[in-house]
Length: 296
Ligand SMILES: [Zn+2]
Image (cartoon, rainbow, N blue to C red; front, top):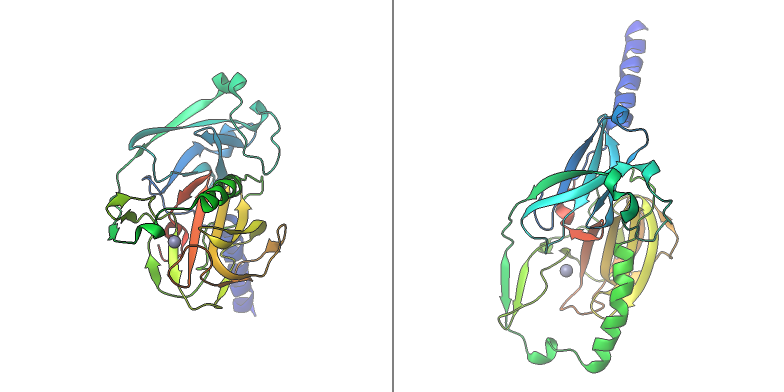
């Protein structure tokens, strides 16, 4: 009986420890397209939770192992060298509307402190393709369509809700081989195109796509390049996007659980075959989804 109670006590202790510090942060990789984890001090250092800004965009802050930490997304086009995050007490801020990208309140910026970090180099692979010009150049009509879609997509990536993500460890949304990695530098007919801003997973049309973490669907659409698309907000500017879907099985505003089916793989938009394009945004910057997968 005593042994039994000890086992229960150990089990409960382990559970308490797990729930207090169980979540793991993404991989710290301060490179273009990567994530920087910055320590902002202990809870006793702050009268209220710290708020951080990077390039005038609100940054995710989280209490982890008794340290406030900023989880900063670095865009693929970020220059190498010194980068700076501005940090302040929550009280020094004006109340910010939820889901609108908050911007720095310049009037009180003198009360802030700055935290610097180095953005190092990363050589992403290059891919050279020869394609017929008609596949590269857009018609007037399509160009107009792309221009109206871009602000919608950008707004979804830059959404900021105050919910703190309950996990940073993502489930792979589709089972299948990675057909193209994040950051691939692409050249069509020797002309540089935008580097690949997500991870491609090959799977047949109709394969279920699941939510990689808990969140809320904040936008769905059918776009020229991305095809049928879902955006999920996981909290504090951590947004995932799923493209080229065959079917969308969730509605805007719907809460989703990790592993919950949200869509099926397809070949909608500008694609050569069925696959899932998966992107992750942090503070509006598109970062490598691989940094959020458990095997890293
Ligand atoms: Zn892709």
